[in-house]
Image (cartoon, rainbow, N blue to C red; front, top):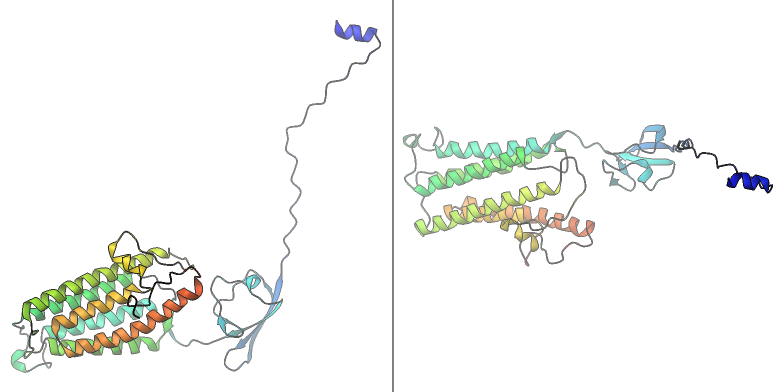
Amino acid sequence: MDILALEAKGGKVEAPPPPVSTKPRPKPPKKPKRIVYFEVEILDARTKEKLLLLDKVVGREGMHGLLQCPGRPLKDEEVLQQLPVGTTATFYFRDLGAQISWGTVFLVECIGPLLIYLMFYFRLPFIYSPKYEFTTSKHWVVHIACLCHSFHYVKRILETLFVHRFSHATMPLRNIFKNCLYYWCFAAWMAYYINHPLYTPPYYGEQQVKSALVVFLFCQLGNFSIHVTLRNLRPPGAKTKKIPYPTKNPFTWIFAVVSCPNYTYEVGSWLGFTVMTQCIPVAAFTAVGFVQMTVWARGKHRTYLKEFKEYPSLRSPILPFVL
């Protein structure tokens, strides 16, 4: 009726709006990404001789294994687009020589002392006088020392297989000879005197041995705890570094004051072994090891300070508040 009335008055009826299409509008075609090509020149790092010239290298390509002028080694994850170079870049190649995996070196340098020490413990022929062949010591500290020494190297072997994640895949092949010479010779020197038929037990007897044994085992557990904590900081395949902090494990609380507590516990273990056996070769091995681990700890401590501005200032490299 209303419509008829409007028509009678000469009014116009507006048509209903057209239905809105529910179909999504097609997306405009994506513009192709601009591909940046590089010209890469590779020179010998020592002689500066041109080795290779690469043309039209895509910017997403990695240059790992090369050195960037003035000599900074490139990381595996770095690509050309992220480097401060133009479209023409020069890199240097350095021949590292024959390489060997870190895991192989660790295993060989640990298996040797384990077997060498047992040879002296069981007094195999041609080591001591013939009348002592395949005999055992009458001093119980000698047997405790053998168990501790074997436990230490079995632990290191298992950690190499199942715990450690190495930041570098390989090291120079010559290192295996240097490392084995160090560990194997010291193991033979220590084992010869500790298992000698004329070996003299510690001056304070049972009390000294038991106290040193507690220190040795405590530090071995602490060393293992630190290694597990460091492993958990780096998931498989991860390259990023993180600051290690104390966890719920009490053995890791030393992270509050030390950057490399794995070395702290390692030195503590050999100090305990030195007191337990009261043997000069063991003391010499402990002293040399402490000097070497101090060098490593200082290097890692400097790296932490350089890479992390928020690194805790209270920490020392290896000995709390001292060194």
